[in-house]
Structure formats: C-alpha cells, structure tokens
Length: 120
Image (tube, rainbow, N blue to C red; front, top):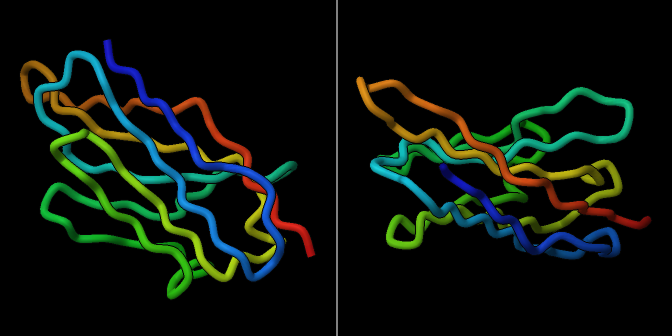
C-alpha cells in the first residue's frame, strides 16, 4: 500500500505565505505526476497545481504567479509554496500522486488533507 502524509497547513493573514509538504511511502515503483487539489466549503474540489515526472508544471489560473509546485524524487515528496495568499485561497488542500503499478496501470493516491485558512 501507499500512504501520503501532508503537513504545513495553518492560519495566515492575507498576503502571507505557507509551504505545504507531502511525502509518499510504501510500495512505490514509479511515480508519475504529483500535485495538489483544494476544496473550499460548499465548492467542488479543484486542481491547484501539478508537476509531471519530467518536471513540467501546470497551475490553476487563480494561483499563477503566486504558487509554486516542486518535487523531490529521492524523498517521493511534493511541495506547494504559496505566496501572496488571499482569503479565497482558504480550503482543505489535498496532495495526490499517480503511481505506476503492475501491467502499466496508473493508480492515484491521496493525502489526508490539510486546512489552509487565510484571514482578511
């Protein structure tokens, strides 16, 4: 099995910064994409940022220029640096990783979620 453990959420004032971390452990052969989703109260889960195995990245329009995703393959970890935070960034943030399993089937695993609250 694979487990993802997140850390780094919390309460911050608007304009502040937070860094989220997520580390995968367990039966891991090969990790493809990693990333972060978020879900605000009463809203659907949305993709915030992703990073592929080749290092290419993608961001939601709402966070471009403010958030930066990175990964550390040796630690099976993904990070999300969040700067210039706004109250509308308040949400539970979930990391995910796509892991290649047997027969070249890709499986997605999720972290437990970490709360980010931005006060105005």
